[in-house]
Amino acid sequence: MIEAILAGAVRGGSSILFAALGETVSEKAGVINLSTEGSMLVGALSAYAVAVETGNAWMGVLAGAAAGATLAALFAAMVVWRGANQLATGIVVLFLALGVTALLGRDYVGVGVEGFDRWAVPLLSDIPFVGTILFDQDPLTYLALLAAPAVWFLLNRTRPGLLVRAAGERGEVLFAAGHSPRLVRFSAVAFGGMLAGIGGAQLSIALALNWSENMVAGRGFVAVALVIFAGWNPIGALVGALFFGGVESLQLQLQAQGVSLPADLLNALPYLATLAVLVVLSRRRLHAAPEGLSRVFEISR
Image 1 (cartoon, rainbow, N blue to C red):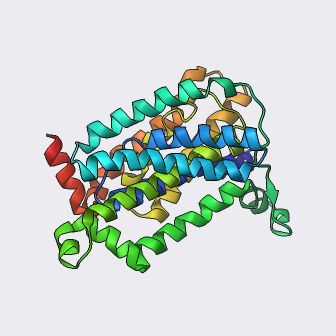
Image 2: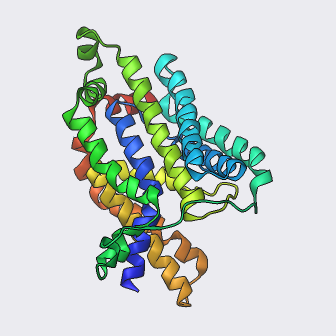
């Protein structure tokens, strides 16, 4: 049972990990994108629809990434270029995504899809215990695990990452150096939406292998919360996503075992656990927040 829970943690946490990594990049640039849930939704539907119509799951991933980036770019256009309130605009864009996906996704409810199967890594998947957990997953799960260190490297060891961090800390310094803080923030938010769209694709064509209205079910908001949990560190986001995925996998195992607890309570368990951890750790993490984020809340008062 422990092996199944841990394997489920890796598989179930991958969609949230993509979104949390994307939100980390966005917030490092000084923009809080509460429409991350919406990018996951449009990514999930676009990936599913394209995979159904073309029979090619990788084309679905590209469509999901493009859809997530497009929605995030819409959000960024309003908050970065027009100066709209980030928190209110994020909620509005999320509801737009909810409505659009509910309308356009009706024809795909109950339609089968050729999604991603598990790819067992030769030799490594035969390792007792660890092989099943880490090396017998779908390709997007492998990609998510690789994306965490890749995003860390991007933010901390590359020039584009330096520009993103400068935009989130002191945009005026970035401007004085001859760069546009607005363009950097816009690009960071769109990139974050692209990753969230891939997370939605992982959910629909690799994990669930179906489409249903509002199937993301709050995972985008969890991803935003995990950024605080992680202290704006991509590696911490990996830990947080695995934690959420593990608790979700645990509650599924408990339901399968027929534990005498209300199903609604078990379904809420991953969110309750994440909330509890945030209550304990959030104050300790606030010092790591980019300076630009503090201005968001000051403006929102």
